[in-house]
Image (cartoon, rainbow, N blue to C red; front, side):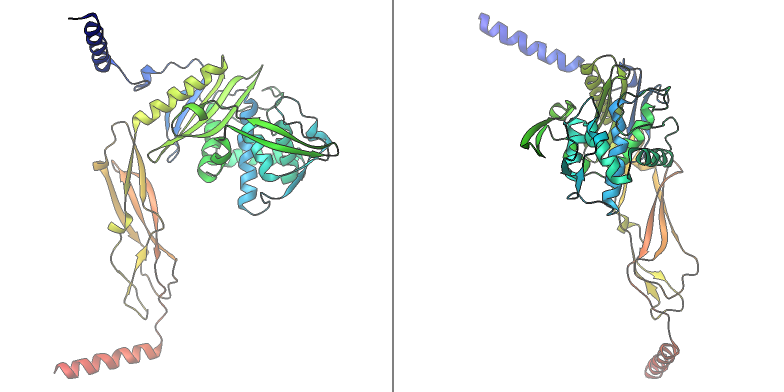
Length: 398
């Protein structure tokens, strides 16, 4: 056998053996090696925890604080309180922020969308404060909203003192935990998925317009995973000398959405590697299951006192669930519950019941059932006509 053939044979044999003995990265919890002080991995649909390490330990969050800032900005957009095209003027205080910034000048105006880019891509402290002042009137009032939102989301180990995480400390009252960061990340990525438009942008630019004229400024994303990880949807990095290196990484594949958070990682590369390992681990555990609710809905629902005997129904969504580890779709069951003594009038879109889903007899979801048509209350004339028709048909039949 020639030397070339020998080399090809050895290479083929090596590849064959490696395929046999190769264990996919992070296929089991034991395979994970997380050096960051705290970490957590959650499945975003249900919020279930897939991995944890000191998940409730109160830590310095640095710039991942801005995940809550972005939540409130997008809440304000959703409620129509503000618009993407609104002009935001930078105050002296906002312009004085150090750390990561885009060097906004006092009196400089940028629209809301540009400010979101600066916060999401470049982690700009000056833009974060400018938006806090624009949304709530002052950073102080905005921080109150941040803490109210944290309480609403069940973030039990979080308290904010500013909107950007700059120069924070636990003793000052600015802290969060890996699990709490995952909760606010889940809220942002599921309630406002449009954030991914900004959080997955690698490079962009803004134009400073000041008295000195116009000048372009480049933005580069601080989250390196957006260039390397398949399915990445965001979300936010953070680092200071006190906080070390933090990251909340979100990703979605085949209908499965995950959030991985690492805090106090010893170096910047490790935070990305560990977040990627957590996400790999999560995707190896999860399977997407769905079912059309139209197959479960009753074909017709009896209604009393109406101009019609029966009412048709619908749902606004199908059933979706993420099966984890050894969970089986064969163990999923469902029951239909309708309002008792359903009586006209019923309006189209009115809630008339629910489909409750169970996994191993444990409730996992409720899908509301709505009337797909309106049924008016029967009048005396309707009853007279009904009686007349019955009389005519009975006479004809005789």
